[in-house]
Length: 129
Image (cartoon, rainbow, N blue to C red):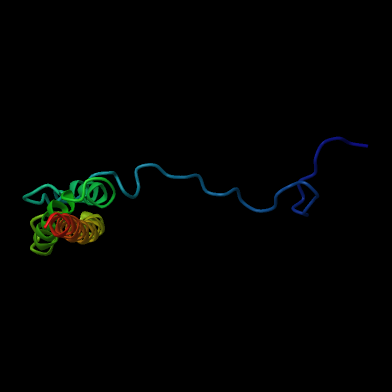
């Protein structure tokens, strides 16, 4: 038998039929440079700060909730006005909501403390009279 392959065009097992796939061409397509400079917003985003203050105001130190609520409102207003990048909108909203909840918890705690103070010292005032 002859060990040289025959190339008569008939398909054989283990041998690809047809032309080879085209090679990737370099120099075509996206070159990595935008056609115009990226838009720069006048103010940097404070969304991360609002979110951190909101979480701390909710979990640890309730008066920071007021700060997060005010800063969140300002951040969202400036995002809507185009002064800050819109990427931080969801973080600013989450921080604002945490600030609102923390402020409500702080107000409830203050009301409870005042009520307890009045009742506690009211009972001692009646007992001594």
